[in-house]
Length: 443
Image (cartoon, rainbow, N blue to C red; front, side):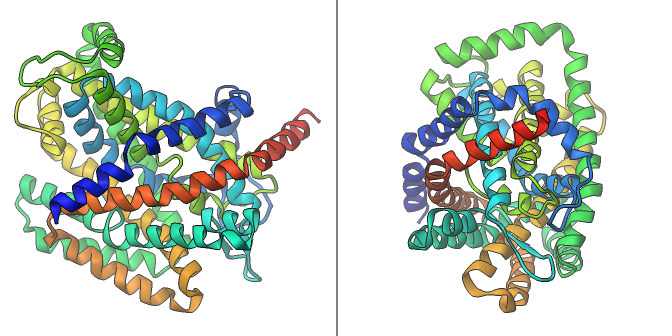
């Protein structure tokens, strides 16, 4: 079974999909005239502005809800894995994926607002399944169903439950000795208390936890980098050189080619910032706004923060301390060694970081899966989904993790295909909405 899953994962996440993801971002970057460079500041400003437009959440609430799913263990463990396999050059290609991913995330945000559905109670349903059907036409509904089905499976059996709970339970058990099963039950109970309260509860928790956990992690990584500040320029030189020449075997590192660095960097970059996968637009659609393009700019900040800020801090911490060269360790263990090399009680701080990142990812993916479930089965069956989700969270502590990550990877890739088709087909709508909003800003 593992061989089959590995082969399928390599096929789904092969060079064609990676080039399609980056290529879509490149095309949108050109058509939008490098909007992610010139309007990033505007996007940051819009986060804190209030709007009386339709929607359920403020721009900040919507952003935090999206970040709750985007900022996960992939920003820590995933980046460690990418550098352990592809070498320091993988971080450069991660930056490339993030740069073009900002244009992709902007387009997703525009379409999410443009084609969202708002019922009489002002409750919002949005995301790729809606901009496929409402933007491309009813005949493309099979693409929307493919996206919604993949999203539901990722939420229930992959990224939303098993992978995150397993990370939390194993980290807590290894660090403070609490049995994984007990941790799983505690996490499931907390999740149940929040998700049965609906979107407003999820958003409120995200608005508190996201700034807190991001602040802690930024301080920790900045301390590690600051302690080794004299090595920053050589580290940056190594990253850029390795991106185009590969990395020779050093220490316990077995060496990596340029193609290996590119593939792992782009794949982990896309996985960590989720640009092009179509998940974040489900949260973006909830924002109160009169302009689709304004929320698109806010969505763009999400990729900048997750792809450039958090992932860069993780990568630089690993490379500047030299721990990426250590033999026989990877993932969370590699990050633990990195934290402990500079900071007292580094293991405890890593456990707290991983727990918060993973917990908020559970909440974010619960909402994504719920909206996908609603699209497939209707609003009346949402309670069934929530019960299933809590049960899967409780089971997550007992599931073999390697197979879970493979299944999550595969389902994420299957989400990307219909979403990217929609982004390409509706790119003219994105351009039109952008021009209209920029004209409005000029007065």
